[in-house]
Image (cartoon, rainbow, N blue to C red; front, side, top):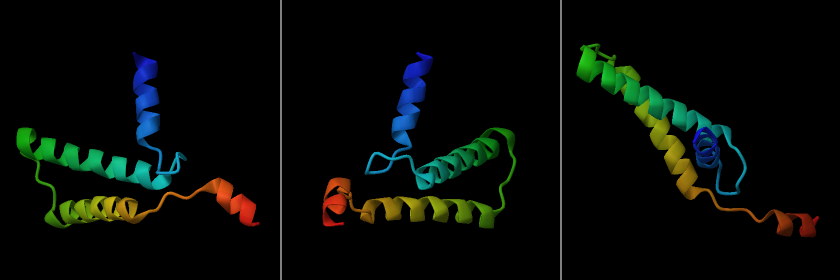
Length: 82
């Protein structure tokens, strides 16, 4: 069970080329921060400053937008050109 979770998490953090990417890790951390801030607001009454919420949301949106316009590269064709 633990290995399946770790493998699923590792697959989730790969980019379109199948390589691990810092962008996916960063987006995952910011989504986790957004969820924690929402839980803190809903259940514990802790307010998150509005500018921090918008900054986190903007970073997640920018990462998702960058992922959507990223094209899958063919590593083999790049090696043949060189």
